[in-house]
Image: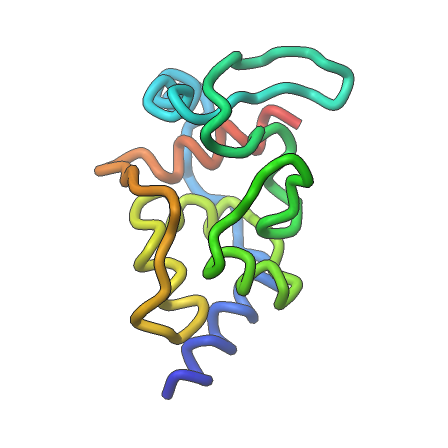
Length: 136
């Protein structure tokens, strides 16, 4: 059963998911909750959001391989998902920000998987993902 859940999650990540109905404008406003830990800074140095450095820079995260920002030290479970070749899409990122540990547990088929990101959004995951997709 573990392998089936793992394969299902990887299949979704590999082929992508249809665009969510998230609202980038709402996500931009809601990103205030995220900027305590995350910045959005373009490769050319353009600062879309100057935030904290606890989490990785989220510029270009949609379409980027999971756990791939060179300047950041990821947790073991997220690195394990990244090692599968998974790539962030809007659906997977929206689910991750709603409950990072639960997403990792499903993705890895491991109920002991944990996230270093302790924050969970109570709503707006699809809006945050849509906003991040718009900042590329």
